[in-house]
Length: 236
Image 1 (tube, rainbow, N blue to C red):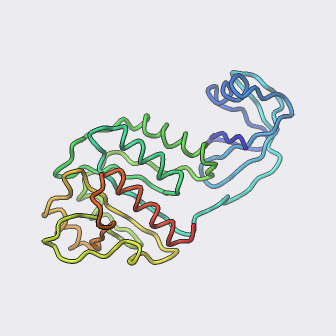
Image 2: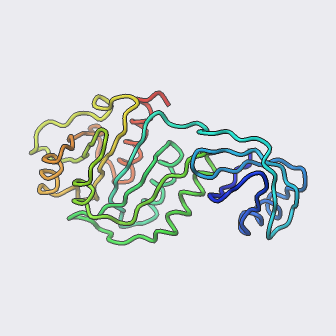
Image 3: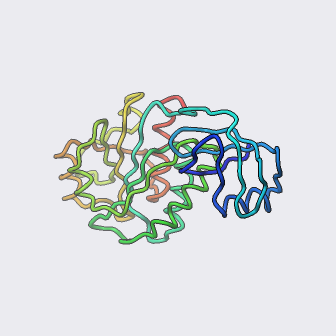
């Protein structure tokens, strides 16, 4: 299956953007009557045939529509502190998209090593992962957001904060805390972990402290591990 991303697709006829048209006609060498698939990122998967194979404006006809294609039975929001080495954060965005995430929130914390991201660049990483992994849902990517703003924003579902500070007492292993088919929000801090004040504030606002195991994990590894744990508990 060749999957393309067009958030503004309007059946029955649709013209791919220039970049997608070039990839379709020049790179993949698809031609008139060849079949391809398009997603709008909102759960719709369209089976299409090419009616005009032009490298700048390839036009297709929608033959069949699959609504809510492989929709997850839960919603997962990952609020993660971007790493100093941005490549590692982008690796997380890619892998988590492949597994299944609805929303990414880059967060700014007391111990953050990076306090800016290139939003358009990170969106391209996510879009590429959507197409590669044949997803019909494109995750939302927020702008860099202060941690306290995330903590105080209402969220309907389970809320977790992963931290390593043993002075706060017992932390539940994430798979044991997850309830199947429920919305989940997980906070993953920077390499220096969340500050004690941030942990206290999160717990006071309904976040459950959790552990991701006994191993010491990098930020991006912890975030991917948490994503996989949620998917596993939900049978995916």
